[in-house]
Image (cartoon, rainbow, N blue to C red; front, side, top):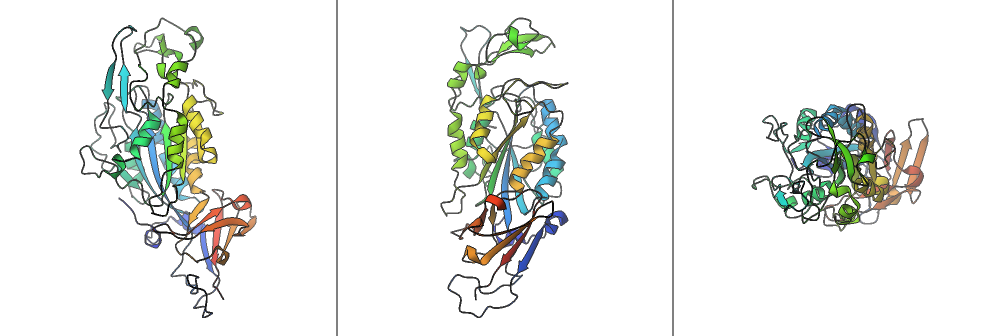
Length: 437
């Protein structure tokens, strides 16, 4: 499932008609420029040797598989066609692949008696490992046949719908950020599919962008030790609102009988949050991932969350007509904020995830760093023309709309679009290579 990079991956012939129509290449000359150009500068302008800019994106979906997540997993599955179509319709060709992990790493729990000993349960078969689709009881769905799906797979949406269905038999101590770090770090990222359990080798491709999407109805409770916080079952008395249950982390929750009882989520109390791994550490990890090309470049990373926030993205225990969040997404909101314009957060309580998934796809379909199939040797030999949805034409030159980075190691040359030339998801892009003469 690992794909090549550069011209070979660009010529697979699988680009959609919509994406192809948005990508126009115009060569400024059509033969050899016998002009004694400096070494390394393009002096042959041929449509056979060049192509439009492109993207490669690895997408990691992090699915909460705790007991309260059945409806939310179904809502993600219902909008995957929207998500995939938005990826394909971007302004540049996007060679993407998708894998799924869960928020399960460990669970430290005790009885309602605060004096009772805690029990620590590990989830080694999850803990950042790419998953197959699961049935409601947590067993593998026999129709789920691949852990990494490619954008050109004919059954992509069908298989992705299975992958996001991770059942509801997972840990109730959701560690989304820790699961991400485990998934993308050694030794797991270097272990191949023949390992027992299988590893994640082949998911992070050299030079590919990374998009991480977390879907959870509680806040992150990441603790690498697994023992910083102890959870307990629903232990309080009857209630009708959170206000009757105390301060932060105390919620009026529907129990297994349908009655509302006060419950303390110790991951979301002030002492509990202070005991967890700092959010800044996880964001630093994402923002400093090496891109695997041997060039010293960092990987372009994006973080999106559909979590326990309001429609405006503010941390709160939101509710809809049929469902409610089980916590307040303060740590996820902090992580997205630290990611700046490479972050997004939407509400888990939305009746549909159509809008959120469309926006998330737009984060990477209009990425501002574009790979070039040919290194012209100088950014001054490139001209970029953007056509906006309203018909406005924006012309971009080196230093006046983009910066140029030469190829290095396995890393292709690339453009970083800036200022007035930042790409929008509805743009059309026209690229010109100018022969040296």
